Image (cartoon, rainbow, N blue to C red; front, side, top):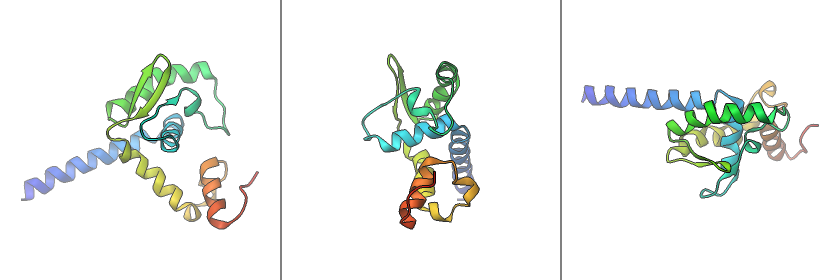
Length: 137
């Protein structure tokens, strides 16, 4: 019984580490949010879906980073699937494990400290909807 709990605890810890590593980069966060907004069986276009609208990036550099770093990392953990022609991404078999982080943040947007909300378009929108305001400009 103790060995089983230890194995399960270790497995859970590893999965959480993978989820948190997946959300440590803005292009990966934006991609996960775009996939949350898309129907479950559809893909989203890249690099467009990995760009924070408040912080535009050089599309050529972002394309290279997606292809060589972000997409392989997310796909290796089963969070997404992706194709190169055209460059698109879809939900992977473990997508819900990263999606729940953003769903939880969005549902608790009014409890998140302002420095983590202001400038984040999605959280500003969620917070405004829950407070009955219009988002800050």
